[in-house]
Length: 179
Image (cartoon, rainbow, N blue to C red; front, side, top):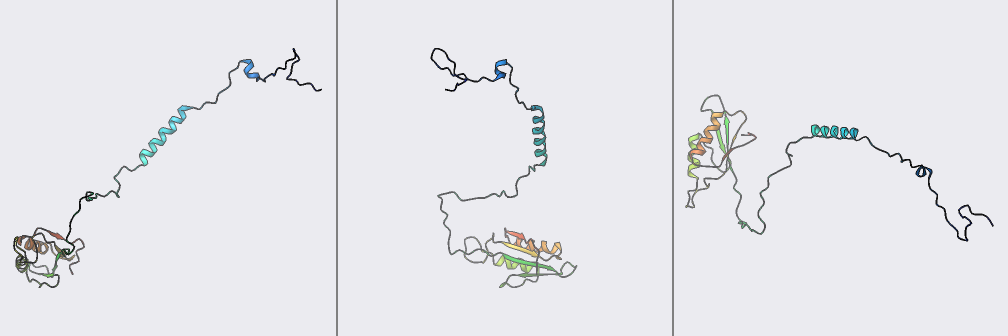
């Protein structure tokens, strides 16, 4: 029979001895791993300052205002109603003099020779409220389309003719094609 070192011969009973490390026996505290918190706080503040300086705080360009209809509210639209095509008035300066300009309207309308002719054309074709005669309502869109070389006084002459005829939706074209 081999002898087991963990067994003690005593009164017929076998005892198991557990191993206890020497450090615990001596009563020394175990060294603990610690981090320097001051250096970590410095790094965190440096990163915070970096991201504050590098961040752009402008509103995003992708934000658009949307007016959506309310749910459950049905809007009845006339399916046979046509979109209003704007009346385009082209103004071209032909010289440096005050009366050196040329006006043109979209087809099938006649070409007015002067701003007074344009005023009379617009006034005669305006639909009076309550009557069914006339082509255009007072809020019908009118676009004044000057060429790039058109003098400002000629553009304002066309605008004043439309305003005198009591039209309320008068705008200028953005491109200035005026051909």
